[in-house]
Amino acid sequence: MSPERVEVIWDAIALHLHYEIAIRKRPEIALVTAGAGFDLGPEGPHTLPAGYADRIHASLPRLHAAPVLYDTIVGQALDKPHKAPPFSMPGELVRQQTQEVWPTWKQLMTQSPSWNDYDGYQPKA
Image 1 (tube, rainbow, N blue to C red):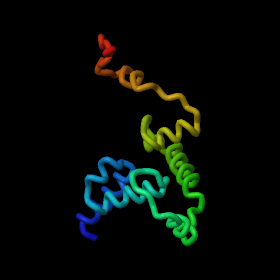
Image 2: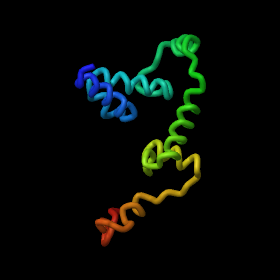
Image 3: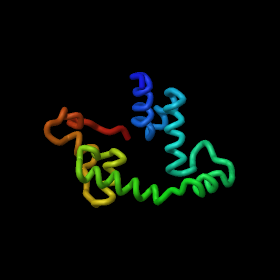
């Protein structure tokens, strides 16, 4: 496979959860994102024809796709915590699973070492 095609595939996988970016890319990348969106749930700007999903699932059963995906993401993240940084989707799933308390944005930004962005800052009313 050519390096150009490999890059398209890589981008499609890397961006599939970033709808606003992916829809501005090549059709292959936008379609992967649209498909992933339908796979997670049929909500959004587009709908499937009545009965279409039922026919697809009769031929290709989901086999508990959502909980299996959840367990896989959480399992990998627990084994390799760098895969689930705070504020990421995997990080949020781990936080929900473990009930771990994570620092707030301000706590993260003010811990040492810090650029002292909050020193003297007065929020707008």
